[in-house]
Image (cartoon, rainbow, N blue to C red; front, side, top):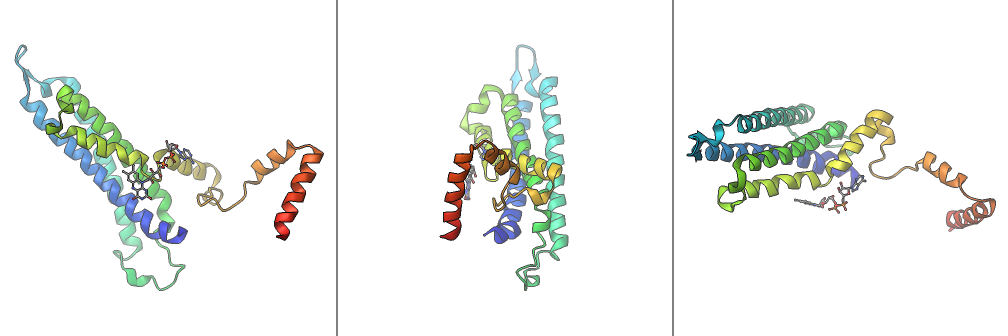
Length: 211
Ligand SMILES: Cc1cc2nc3c(=O)[nH]c(=O)nc-3n(C[C@H](O)[C@H](O)[C@H](O)COP(=O)(O)OP(=O)(O)OC[C@H]3O[C@@H](n4cnc5c(N)ncnc54)[C@H](O)[C@@H]3O)c2cc1C
């Protein structure tokens, strides 16, 4: 399944779900704008949106969301360009895998958009105060949905390691389908064995090799 995952499932999941998380960010800001421009603290005559703290929250979230939207657009455009606008008739050979070549970038898009939505829904809940906990306002549902992106496979913990490892050591050593042996780990572990343990291990390996 590796080829179909990398060429079809992941590219579409990573880009389209990222677009959804951007939409959740925008929806959370819409609700926040609606709520904070209407709610007045009558003792001081200020709307919640008049406080600089709330303006800062919305400003930063809008900047982050637009950066995320631009990133998704860039990825979608790259996919369109690589595939003649998603022309499936080009797939006459199994080795023709145009989307797979930019998977590393698509991982980064998923990481960034799900990290952004995690932050945005958190801050929009803060901006709406305790009222944000009321289901009727709609923020709490967006918070639950938005935060799911981080833990959806490939999780963000896994993705940032993929990206960092491949940047440092090269994509070919990433081994994200767990197919090649890590000789460094293997040699290090073998060094710890006594002669007797090595002999027993070698006997076991030989039996496996001959089975
Ligand atoms: C909303 C939602 C929709 C989903 N939809 C689907 C779907 O359509 N199809 C499907 O097959 N699955 C789906 N999943 C499941 C999803 O793929 C898994 O939840 C995800 O892969 C994480 O696996 P897990 O829940 O077993 O957590 P675990 O793998 O137990 O992870 C627990 C923690 O360990 C970290 N971790 C795990 N492995 C590593 C590693 N190698 N390096 C560093 N950290 C690691 C994780 O990041 C996490 O923080 C969905 C999940 C969610 C939340």
